[in-house]
Image (tube, rainbow, N blue to C red; front, side, top):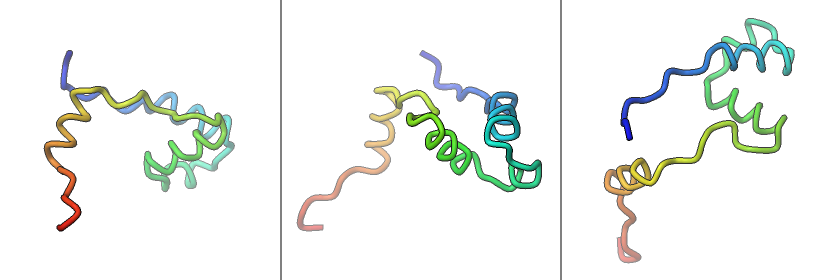
Length: 71
């Protein structure tokens, strides 16, 4: 499994943002990728991205460990 991130899917994002959501170019380009993802999620009723891998989750948990109840 490669840890190299996939490039952002600009063609798909533009097709959905400009074509399906009918955002103006100015509206589309002023959105963050997270805002666009949430708009797509609202449209489709599902998550627009793939689930986090087990390795990515382990790395995230190592970087930001849960604190105990006394912390």
